Length: 327
Image (tube, rainbow, N blue to C red):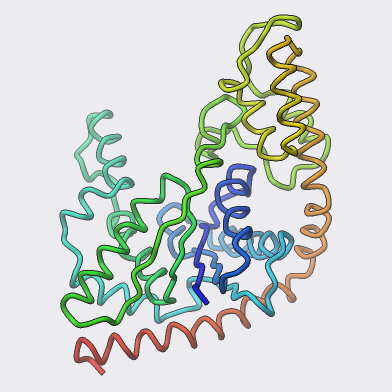
């Protein structure tokens, strides 16, 4: 049985972009063994409040469980509870070309931002950000991930993990599994309320567990063009329609497309989006609130998952040690 592996950083409120780009694609794949993790160590590059980090990690645990993760079948864990990951990351550093890190998207974006602001290239760039792809590779390779569902912006990191696994195996023999990236093209980019990619950094997100009133208010804020009721509209350039097709049935999507071409008002289109989103997420929201209230239960689930994940990672570490001569 192939192993699906995916993780998410606890850096803020979970929103529809996370749901459509991360949670739903990962949880749709049900024929694989699933290893799902909370990437709390990755978040240390930006998250400086330890209590908030602990709280956000529990938020994500409750989110996974509310969305259907079965702790009896799946393995749900915190990255920081698996020390084997960090040993594998250290070993992988020995087969990682520095040039590959120079070309990593996150580092290149930081350098570009510094240059634009007139600062030195590496201003405020820590080694956690610079070597982020190595640790992400270890997340995947230590647990033997075969399939890694990611958004388009994370695809490069999985490709780096593939390159490092191939380089390690070329040097030491067939020890590490070479993962495959899985990108759901239907949700590669999820628009926010301002039409740009939904992102906390743009302050344009719609929280996954927003109250019905908050959901109504945020959907009403989605930016549209100036065409009024009665004027034909292009559904393929409208963020309201783009979000709607991720939650509606095919028949509902076809009907709304027809109404766009006939001149539906944007208020009506937003009402259709609200109905579709609330239909799918209202029961999930109720489950999340009940789960999040039981912090002891969430910690037990994570501790159990960590124990099972360490069994898997331990096998990898023993094989790696034998291969490189440290064990």
